[in-house]
Length: 310
Image (cartoon, rainbow, N blue to C red; front, side, top):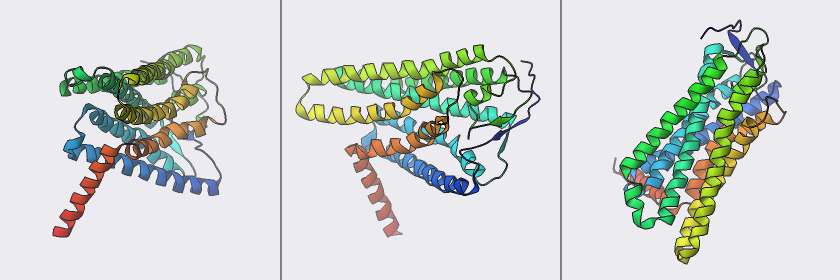
């Protein structure tokens, strides 16, 4: 593809240009990012070391925490570092890499959430066939498909980004590189590109959200035939998943399913799903899940005992 670009770097304006507020941004988002790493690494370690968490649900939760960690890492370190700098420039190549990683792990999270809903549907609606349908091999294949699908989606985003000619302005009024703010800087008609963006990212967000909501309606409807204890346990798990789905998809749908216009609130909404959701997910899945909490206690107890023996 022949590129007609005179721009070699972009200037990210970040959340604010005020020196005092930039320090607040640095401290706040450093703590949020460290909390995200700690929470997700704790879930990853617990699932990997606990035999009690060997079911498909925790296999998918492992990959959700992994995608959350990588998703926030594609954004947060750069954002935190930029809060300390006066000139926050990012090279064209770095910008493209960020677009790819941001969309890759964001799309992967969407697909993993769908797989978790499928797992809950089979467990609740077809319990007698659960072990056959959701075998370890099937789960591995599903996750592999999710990774490949995310890669295809991200490559499509890169193709759209590289098709844009940049020959003038290079200031991005955002804290990250994404197609929406890049469209504003292109020195060409971006109607078709924006249409492709909506049909790609927008469609994935909207269709996936609709599929997830329908699946959970079916699951909750089928709970009428279960015992009180079975309903309580299934409801606890499903409500956790529904909270995560709403928190993640709400902002995504708002950002990616509209024309290429920007609003003052866009950056704060982006903060919520790029840095807030990866932090909230571990809290939701641990605070509402007794099995995960018990496994964490056992893991911590083993660590304390091993430390005492030294």
